[in-house]
Image: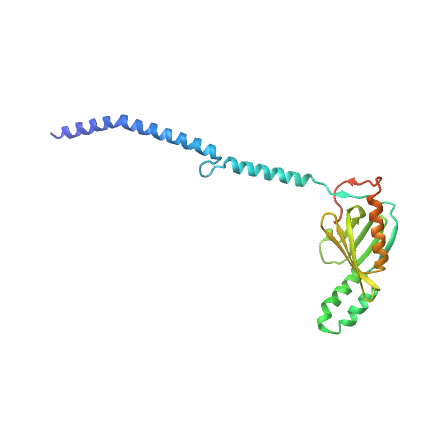
Amino acid sequence: LASEPRERLATLRLRAGPGDEGTSDDDGDFEERLAKLRAAKGTTGRGQGGSKSKAKAESGEQGATKKIAVKKKVYDYTGETVFFESRPSAGDLAVNVALGATLLWLPLTFAAVGRYAWVNYKVTDKRISVSNTSPVGKEEEKQTDVAYEEIASVVAIGRGFGLWGDMVVNLKDGSKCEIRSIDKWQEIKAYIEERVKAVSSDPSVVTVEAEPMGFS
């Protein structure tokens, strides 16, 4: 009698065998359909990169490559003729030092003193140059050279009863070059506009492709 349940149990196990194979086949079909569905949607299982993520990664790499490949124009300034070269206006310095007696004006006084001590403006027939010899700041930001080919417009306003003025040079790429407290601002503005017009109509202007020097 004890052996009879064992025989029945073995019979049940043998009979369950074909059913298990059918279940395994169904699971295989389900996994295959699921894989096809994921492939059609461009996704995969967890921990795996889909085609969409791969496409984004490839496009990101291509964009980075394009950015690196872009070179900045470097202009040839050899043989240039200097039209104006000077520090910021001494009149601006004197006014700001006098007004420094009021505590509220002290920040502007310090700015004027530092500007007069370290900043130098130069306008030639090929560029506008602003140099800063201050010991503070990044080294690559202490020299600004703007070629007339890059200038879109110039805006200037007089200060100190018109004895000196401030100037903003708008560039074609949307950036700006600010010139604070410069003497002869009206003459310089007229000269810059004249040079911009002359350069834009001169087909002989040649630029050189090289690594950027300074910034503009």
